[in-house]
Image (cartoon, rainbow, N blue to C red; front, side, top):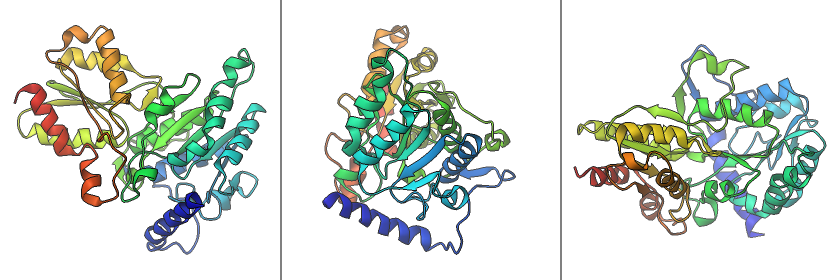
Length: 364
């Protein structure tokens, strides 16, 4: 019961913030190709719209994704355009509708399942791991499971421990899953389209705090055939003194730190992982060979985290002997997320925390 009540609390808070802006009629919220700015929300919306239009096997299901336009308005306008035959509202029963979607994928459809928050995916983890991730192997390669599990992941704001966990490391631990953790609008549009077209089950981890953030994009990003490669990291910013490796909102912290460090004469290179499994360690290694220093940045917990895996692979790989100092992790605090605003702030790797870690690593 508490599970359902918390969701309706989220509905109310999101409704206040979204409908206060005015929405007399539903329409697709897609930024104009003529503008240089595109929000993460609109990028995801455009990717869903284009793939629904492109392939009649694609459908979207989840809590409030249809008539309410999604808790975070990512699916705005899609129900009006594609109707109940392609956009399905579900009851508050993750295990049930996730199992239904996995079964549909077994039979050749391409479901996109939205979790209102990936914390609620724990209700359906048996379907995600045992039914979706392992079936291709257990069928001897005969049964593909082309399904996307997507929704907000990691810390948001003021939603406490049960709605703030990062599940990147959890899902990336499982063979059979591909795990994507995009940062900007280009990542979100290109990688969501790639995920929907992929023959394997994909966990697509968005971030609530980035939904309304606008990023400049090239005209090619707005083209319907724009697709980004899964498993390939991106150099978000070039530098020469230290490599900052991050994913999702961690890239925001890393970019902010790089800007602050530049004022003090420190040039930081930021590697946006984008894909957690498969992990593009080659791009990380190439960056280390140039900078000779490594710091990982993530919002999740430190133990057994994404940063721990990155550092481990670096230690075991060809870039280890290029390091002039031990590689270091900068992560969220090793505690359940506090509700109090000041404690929540200090439990996440804010820009000043990353800056201090870099200076300590470089002896500056």
